[in-house]
Length: 123
Image (tube, rainbow, N blue to C red; front, side):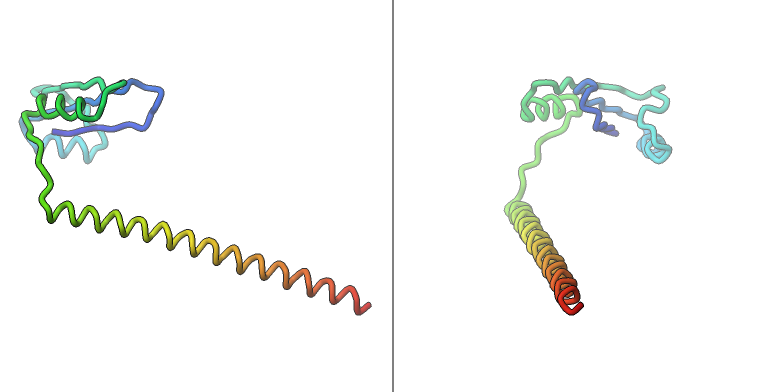
């Protein structure tokens, strides 16, 4: 099964799912950059996602693909929580670094202005 996603917001909100009896052929089409390739012996299903809740979309996806929802284990939940905490820390670090850099640049500008002011007084 291959899913292809676009970022075009003006287009239709459709999830197109391509099924292939041969996993090798799907992989080769992806490597060539086209999941649509030759649909001979392939199965094509679409899900209209416009104005639909993610639970509805997931339910239809699972029905079409004969899939089943996997409930996250406690270990997976812990890893996800750690990842979210790390992302939050990264954002804080980025903000602190940006503020530090802005302060250094501001200090450098002030020193440069002071040098020019002192140089003008000497003449």
